[in-house]
Structure formats: structure tokens, C-alpha cells
Image (cartoon, helix red, strand yellow):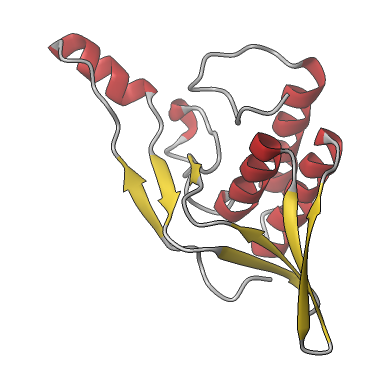
Length: 159
């Protein structure tokens, strides 16, 4: 479990000049966040995942019409950020802490592994079992059928 929440700053959303397009763009576009310093998620006392400073994420990719029930930067945020990074870059860096020494290893795994890791981290960071499984099913469904959804529904650049 992580000791602290990651430090983020909002990324500017570019709007189209036309007033009507600007309203639509604001409604469709997700808020994006840039990581201000390396974020370490401690899976256990000896292993932590490291997400590097500068990574940009939209948090949990929840369609806008569900935002009144589930915030994209809420209970699924940490699991989503780690999943987004793993899918976008194809690896996660694990820092192993053994006898006071640390060793960083880049792990390359399958999309199924990243999806299951998402569920594991979601369970560790919140107690919302049903929400976690619904989110995991949506993530897995996106992986399995590889639908080309509009950008405002897509989880990340995962294939």
C-alpha cells in the first residue's frame, strides 16, 4: 500500500475557438493530470512500482454520464494511473528493496497481467468490491474485444 497520494498538476485542455465547439470540447475532453514527482506504490514492504515524474494520465476513464456516481480521480485513480502507464509504455518499473539495497527492474507483461494488476491495486486502495469488479470487467472487455471507441471512452493507448 502506498504511503501518500501522488503529486499532480492539471494539464491545460485546448479548446476550439468556436463557442459551440468549445462547449462540446469541454464536455467531451477528460481532465488530464501530470505527475510532478516520481510516484512509488508499495505493493509490499520489499517491492514498489515506480511511475516517473512527467507521466500524464486522465485517471479512471469513466464516461461523463457516470461522473456523478464515480469520480475519475477518486477511488480507482491510483490503480488506473499504474494501469495506464503499464499499457502506454509496455512495462512497469519495480523497485526491489532487499537488505537496504534497491534494485530497479523493468517488467514487461501481457495486457491481461496489467488488467489483473489493476484489480489487485484497486482492491488494496479501496473497499468497494463491486465497483472494483465492474471497473475490471470494463478494462478486460476493452482488452479482449479491442473496440475502437471514441477518445472520451477509451482507457488508454493499450492494444
